[in-house]
Length: 108
Length: 392
Image (cartoon, rainbow over all chains, first blue to last red; front, side, top):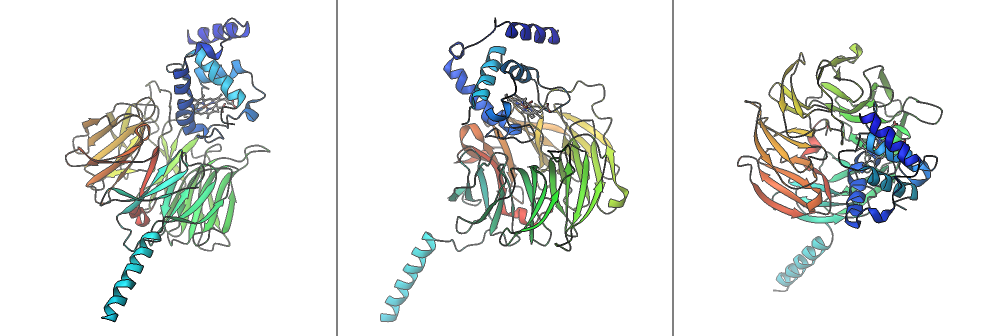
């Protein structure tokens, strides 16, 4: 079931139906997500996202990856590694927005 | 008369100078608190519950930790960005600072107090410095993972006989480094200790080193009285048949909770604290708790265990009675309850509450909040009594 949702999400994203713009995420929620990114993702990726147990999430390092791929990593995690699935706390559009922020270099 | 005036002037001058510069007092009831976002530390007085100094300019302090010189005057602070900073807590000043690696994860001070070892993620390995002036004494690169990367080093502790012990995350090793001759570190490597060791701890007496494993069930135990025997897996059946939960924050083993002959450990991926009998290291019980434990710490007399939790349960602290193995209190101190530090004799525990920008001090007998002090995004709390404890 989970796999299906992921597949559908991937398809939707791939076909552009699910693209999000920042306007769809309330500014207050955006601030919450950035706080989460800094402090909770930061416990593995470093508060400045320059890496820790998990890899650096700087724009430079993420340049080769697409936003969809990164958004999927965020909501699904990476089984077999410490990267946990954030789906219970982050919706797909929010993950997409967050991935976009990472790609742009949220910290620079 | 003239002499008296001279005396008065001299003492006025002296006290003015003392307040402008350094304190003249013992440091036994002092400590530091990491302000993780501001890159600063506060020097605090444990007895008055007050801040004495704020020291700035320590770099990225997310996940920072600290050790103390044996005279309890200097704190060595390990920052995330590879910064190693020596802080004079009587003067509230940085005396030395080096940026020694790209990305680091804590350190240790040698038994004789002369060496500071730092564990690095990037480039993977351990570097060892003089505690005097932070000059490099030894560089110990970790095993290569591929042509560009070396294994991340984790769980670095000091051990008796002037040794350091640490584990290699990517390659599953535990190394024992003997620094008796600083010019010639002797390294004993234990290979294949288990999958993805993420942190390590040493028992207070310095005998057992235990690495927590992320990649499989169980922990890797090394008896430092007999390092030649290598590591063995303990608790490898723990959690069998139970669904492992995603881990939103890696547990810390540093606060090794030993109460009597029992050890209390965080159950990785479970809402449980594990209880193990020391010696044969067999499980004696599991205690269900509110969330996934991060720090599981014993009150110094071993009568209580205090536990904090990973996201999204990091607004809660639970207290366990070590006799009945029952949760006796659930506290809701606020979001981001990140770290706890006991007074060395256990009458108080200080807890950092990140999202409230404060430290809360609890009486461990009444389990009531008795003080709070403002600190900007506090994380680690380190009291000077650590200077005399192996593994801290």
